[in-house]
Image 1: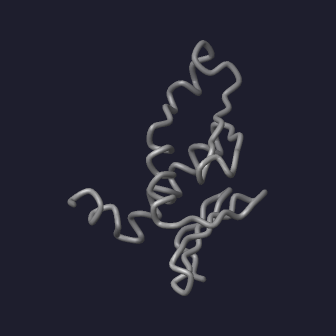
Image 2: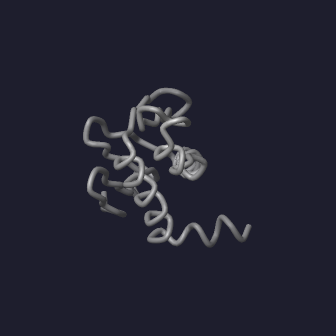
Image 3: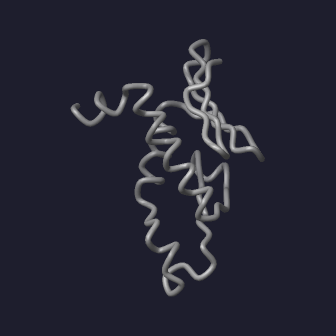
Length: 104
């Protein structure tokens, strides 16, 4: 396995042999197919960071994230969420997949 991208809280690995990705979230490592990784990107992109700074919209500053058809549940604070957003975006850039997916 090779490291695709590493952030402060998370590491994304790519396994060419198994044709999948592994997301190490410190508490747990999750095996993701490419489709599941795309779904993660979609979920992360749809989370509004602005709501984390508005106490009326997000009183506690936490985000609940369910992955892989609700197999995994994570509660992330604002800093962890920002870190995950950067990991997902930079991972697709380093994989050079974002260009392929968005132009199709």
